[in-house]
Image (tube, rainbow, N blue to C red; front, side):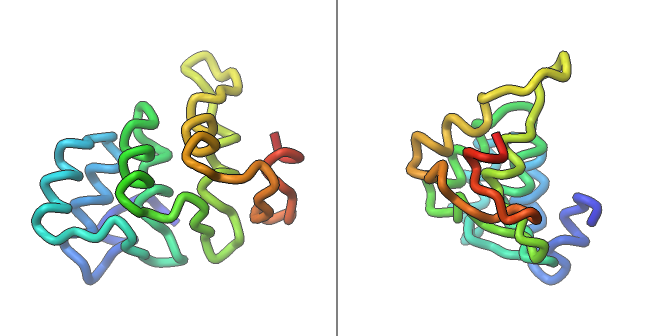
Length: 127
């Protein structure tokens, strides 16, 4: 599925705006939209969540903020792939694996024993 907020959240304009802000990593805009009634727990097509969208931001700040506000840190797509399983696969600008995206999730309480990717592996095994 393409990461187009209008496609992912076709009937929720505020969720579309929140998804666009999450993709950019714009925490200030996310806060504004939440104050206007935006739901950090919004689910879109194929069970995509705002934390899934935030994984494509330049840094993990929006992901961390969403989870701190109550978004599901272990949300799974309809395929079973979870936010943390995608976070483990993130790379830095030089293409090297980085812990920058999974470390905050672990600090926020995500278990390294979480099962949920397509291969049904734990985060620890996947890493």
